[in-house]
Length: 113
Image (cartoon, rainbow, N blue to C red; front, side, top):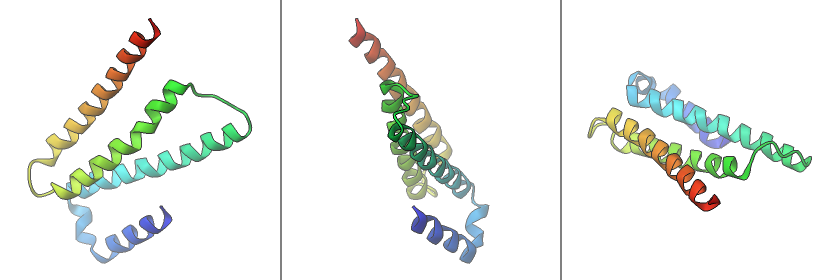
């Protein structure tokens, strides 16, 4: 993570015109979300080492899917930045994530019955 952030910042300082593109700003927002996710995982890991369990297994299952969706979004933005309208794609990915979580909730209710 540290190397990826270092080289990403280095690339942006060499090619500052990338920052003006809207797709790059959205991509950077997703990268910042991943960095926060990483620190949250570290916090949860330290809590679990001290036998402090604050989150349910259901939360952890859903929390585990977040980086996959975010990384897929980043790759999607980079590949299709000039192709189809990436805004519709990003909204589609967010809707997909919501549907995925709703499906999990429905499955959980069916499993508990």
